[in-house]
Image 1 (tube, rainbow, N blue to C red):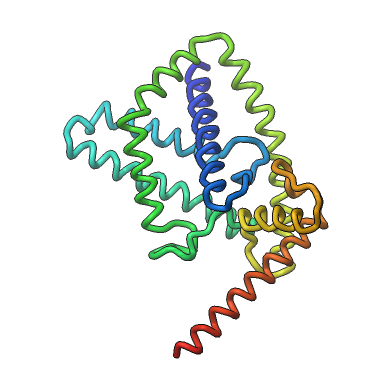
Image 2: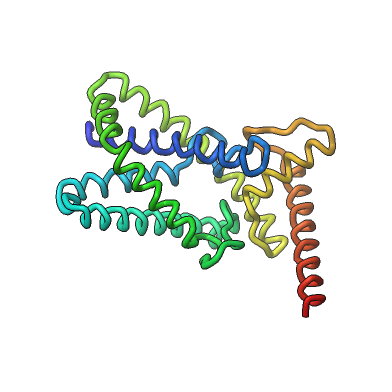
Length: 246
């Protein structure tokens, strides 16, 4: 039970911190507060899983090979590969299975199907190095302290209760988007769609929702149509520019 509590707390802390990181990244990128991820609540499961990977790899490395400078380099390489693989598997599940793209690296050099790319693999490596050299020992201390306190079970139970409800609702939304993607023979970008709905709400002088932005199925369908129309216009403009250049 104590082992489960420790794993759960690492998952919760990682997912919550990852949410904050992505929230401010989107604010800087779009100039708007966009709720990141496919869940409605303030949590990103990919970062929770990633933090578990970081915790496991760093703990194993400290106990075995990360006792020399080259051992630490190997540890960071393992982290980079593990995080890239986690991103790849998650991206493929959503893009291929659900026809929803949670992120898109298509415009970046060396990308694989817009899901992973060298630049973000390096970023994962840098995050892994920051975690190992700065955060790991503090997370170990925090998790052990939480595990030994009675309110730990309450926090874990409350979190997973809310998490499961949010997960069911979010998969219902993804099912709706998958049906729209099948109808239009495309893959729907999750983040561009959220941005499009914010822009559309402002244009129509209606209220935009930070949480539960896909609650109205008709609004979602209209926003999908607008986003695809904009994408097609951009593609046509690019083709015309390329033809003029030739």
